[in-house]
Image 1 (cartoon, helix red, strand yellow):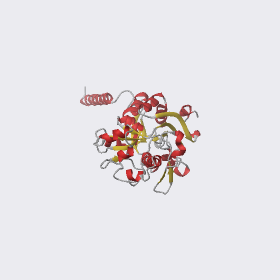
Image 2 (cartoon, one colour):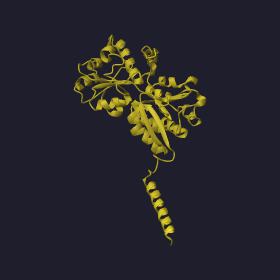
Image 3 (tube, one colour):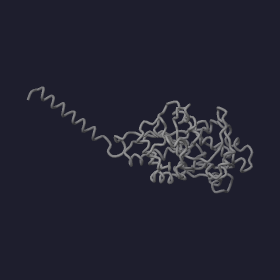
Image 4 (spheres, one colour):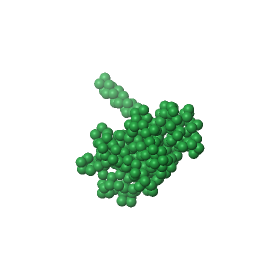
Amino acid sequence: MTRRRALAIQVVALLAAVAMAVAGCAPSGGAGSAKGKVNVAYAGSLVNLMEHKLGPAFAQATGYTFEGEGAGSTALANQIKSKLISPDIFISASSAAYTPLQGAANSNIVRWYVTYATTSMVIGFSPKSQFAAQLEAAASGQTPWYQALETPGLRLGRTDPKLDPKGVNTLYTLQLAARYYAQPGLSQRLLGDAENASQIFPEEELVARLTAGQLDAGFFYLNEVKDAGLPYITLPSQINLGDAALASAYHAATYVDARGVTHHGGPIAFSVTIPSTVRNEAGAEAFVTYLLGSSGKSALAADGFTVTPPKLTGDAAALPASLKALVGA
């Protein structure tokens, strides 16, 4: 055997060994398969559900890789519009977040969305808080919840109404509460200004800050506190934005944004769409199918959501054929 041939055999053997090593390191089964990634931009109130429950379950069941990004729905919409992110899926806690992405003037980034679940506003609190006794008394109905929140020194958290629908819903809830309890000025007493920086935190961080003891209480969606196992104060349906039958009453609450546009309160509803930024169309359709199917519904219900029949809004002709049966289109 010549020296050149021996060297060639060694090179081939080395390449084969490297290939085997790479193959051995590659994950088997669902996640990381050749089907590729599905990038899901979702409302920050879904962080734990998406990252630790529904996302991994979707990957395991379908063979796609789940890649999530959570933030306030309005903030995500702004990032999509500005082309800072290009998700395959956009899940919002408010249909209003789709507005800047709809229509020819906005390149028809969103042409349809499907509403699939509802929730309500609650006040979550830390069981380790020095004010836990007052908050527990409010949770059991012994004292008014707004009196507990007025306790001097209590650290209250909420999200930014400019970036997150829950921040706006907090303002709606306090407006409705002021009328319901005949407490003029209640919102100002509890929240201060709408943009009170001392109370405002990113949506995806609010639960973590509460559990870490940085906050005593905060305004949350019911699914968030149930998911985190936190104690909470239930609010009357007249003010918690969780009853579709009270939509006209909720409409009385208003919020004027920085552009001077007036928004009205309404029942909280989560929805999903496949925006035109989609890169993995098959994966996006598979995710929506999973979310609206039996496994997705079970995960949502276990997380504290009220699952509703899928309702399509927008251009039915733009809805992928694989999803039409799911929404009766």
